[in-house]
Image (cartoon, rainbow, N blue to C red):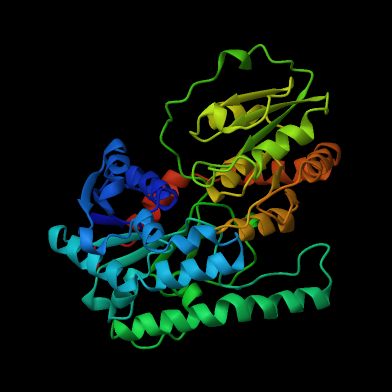
Length: 420
């Protein structure tokens, strides 16, 4: 079969799509379409590429340049709403146009799009016989930002939970629903019969989620299939020389701000180094995600090591606690290795990922994107000293181990046949 992989021009969205594309290329003809700025990522994955036309590019850098106020907004609901309205909703027509352009070049039987690629809606709302099969791949927790199936979290009273939900609906769901309705109307699309932020999971012919059921809130969407963690491409980073000679009597705390929201080390990395410098039973390992080591504006404590990149697949089996800003891919990988965590992040999907960490019992949510050093220290001690976090993370590790993501992906896609 011919499979067109479609991703928004965001590296964090493209990475899991490329993982799926590499697997599918074992048995099918695969092409990838995204913004031309990300061509190198696609070609490094060994996949064929169709660049979006420049005038309708979905590259996130183009959006940020056009909306400098976005970067100045504090991480949280205001910034989230702005992005959903002005990048995602406003880009539906461009996404749909880019998809039509790619399909003219590559007549795909199946479109595999990321779970924020709403340009599939014009096709999904056409009669099934008139379009290709459409599959979406989850790139974050299921139904992220939709308010769908959100349970009452541990430690939150029933009244506070109701207040939170009302505030979330007024701040995000209602205005974003209106923005999407306007964007769809301009595309000549009839009103959706489901909430728009649930629509791709509900309307797709298949929704494949590279994660495990236990980390997602309970749901009743029948076409969602959890497959476990997709294999990532081998990175170029190597185990540093000091790793083998580390003091193995001490527990390991790994700290990361990811590879995107890592311009300001004072948000999480620096508070973690300060907060943990006198914890004599731990060593602290920091990865800057590609930023230079001098981006950390403080003297390195004696119990800490810093690298620009680390091979997580080699390091995580020996990590006792992960301190992270909540990138879904990093959290998913940590759980696959049974590592509990401390999460401090509010941007993009990170607030919801952090809430899932708390709800699932695998870590502590600090409810901020700018952590205090004492808060990090207390949270790390809590996770280290209370065995329930590690026990719950190990249960999720076993659930991941029971999955065969490659086989499941190939079988699910294969079951769709070439019908279009």
